[in-house]
Amino acid sequence: HASRSSHGIFLPHLVASLEQVQQTYIMVKPDGVQRGLEHYKDLKAKPFYPKLIDYITSGPVVCMAWEGVGVVLSARKLIGSTDPLQAEPGTIRGDLAVQTGRNVVHGSDSPENGKRETALWFKEGELCQWTPAQAPWLQE
Ligand code: ADP
Image (tube, rainbow, N blue to C red; front, top):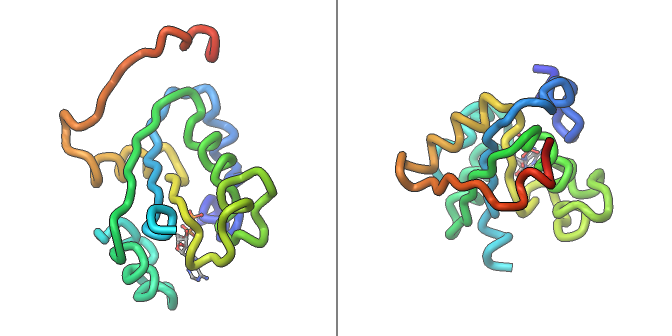
């Protein structure tokens, strides 16, 4: 659907949700660690799916769950566009990645997927919930 703009980070519905406290699932993909899961089941019909699964199960990944106001979109901005050639300098993919098939990091594309993917990769009790002392200085 519209939000799955293949190479965009500026998913329109995310802009509308900037006021919500959200969870987003962030992952450093295997190439990010060294230079599977059915996480990508919604992409099953894509021609690159088999290669994507080989890639994502090719080595350890680093999993993170971030929480904060508008964090889904702010994480996507930090990560940059899916295609590293379209990603701005200063973004993780823009600075560090070369090809879409090796784009270093993942970030959920909607608050719903943020919740779903966080639950897929973390058991209850594995997430550490805390409030940094500086939180009121970062967010109203
Ligand atoms: P994003 O990760 O930016 O949300 P998508 O959900 O569209 O992007 O795609 C998921 C992942 O599938 C991408 O990050 C990339 O690793 C891989 N991928 C997407 N499109 C292609 C493609 N055309 N060729 C190879 N791999 C792709």
